[in-house]
Image (cartoon, rainbow over all chains, first blue to last red; front, top):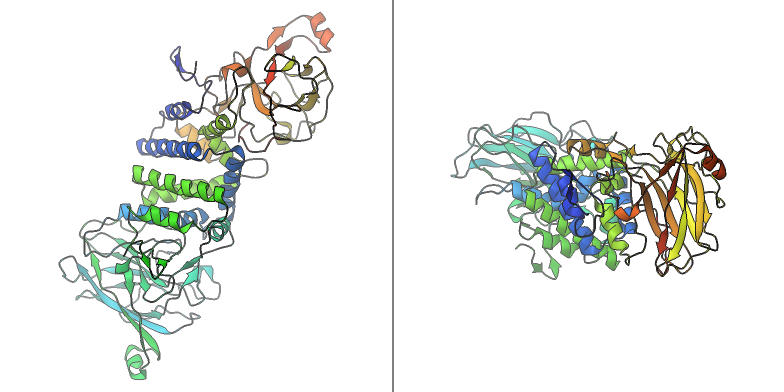
Length: 312
Length: 312
């Protein structure tokens, strides 16, 4: 008697292709937390639908198990291979898009990536976040933070991070000083901000694990276009986690983690003038990039969850 | 220009909730192996559909990443937590059901579990597979192996394994002799088989990992009903991986891995007669269980894939 009620007890014998999903869903009805029950139930339904659609074989299920086991084995506090998988399969940017439906004009969001560190050093307007062993040309990044009506937002905090020219974030690279290329900057009373950094570069995501193998097998490359990460927060506005990409980068249209949006691409204008460079306290040639952020009103999370991405 | 063709190159900027899935699917078209492409494409579609349906948040994606990372970390050559997850969410038995559509009358299949070992010692009809430190009452298991027409199959190999009374398979238990409660037996010219073992017992699946936590949170127990595993193979017949369950077990209708089928339940009849016991070479009380297997014609795999299950 498949999946019938006998003496008030569910029986679970003789489960078939047709009734097994319902039987499993019945078994999780005791889950206390409603949201967890919803998530688990949907995961079960979609996993079963996947297996039915592709007529998954026992051998393939075993291969999947080995793949996910390797995902876990290669992960540590600094490397999150599951999130890298999510990023490279577009799941992260989908979740990000659903979470951050922005009104027209507001700065769009993008993936957080796994390399954010809280409590980056505070810097003042015009300061450099290049603390040494960075390489590459200096870059001046400046602009404004405004609201949807174009009114300047004073006291907005810009939490900034990027890689050095070798493609590594400082916490993945023993040769860089602690907190290199990270900083927290506050917009002035006109909503303006400015800092000195290094020209960002395109770089590969980790390819020595199962995700790298999957990308290569798919005929994909593993590169991300050059970018600088920002988290912007201000009293009375929604916090936005985003990235600004360098115009002209060859990977803008094929970002391995699908993070690029046209509105987040900005030009790093090269300048060979020694006098101009000196006025910014850098050496020529340098690059000047302007980006104006627009925040929407609301209450953002006090700080970003370390959750939205897995690569960079 | 979201997801359009520019100069012959796909562009992938400005991906939205609506077009991201198609863009990701486009990116895996270079996958060389057609079946892998089919599996990966379906996995992407179902994962995205899941995320859309539940409106997955970045925090929940991060929690999922931590869950799967823990799954990998706790796994080793003897413990396959991902397969345990698949088993306890009914995915394994679904895959098994799709793989093993049996004609009426043929012995049904069930999950293989992770505790199979190839090359178990050969035993002769009537021999015991209890090699010591097993506990519990002796049991005589016997019956026949026949084809769909009721004709005996001589020379069928029965590959048998089960736990001791402490609930452990020998390879998980340093106190049991190597290959305890495992054996390979051959049916005689009448298709008959017989061996001595110990009464099987219900036992818990591992609960010290993420799967155990998930089951407890769902209000489920972690028990499997008492059973003996069999893999039957014979020249000209499909190999069948199955389990025979003990009638009366309190967990028959709530097997943690959904493996029970009515046709696979058999009674272990208790017998207190010292004379009867002596005729089988055991001591009273003992238990007598008869099960007649029926194989369908065809070509089975030479040996079972270690793939169909993750718990027992």
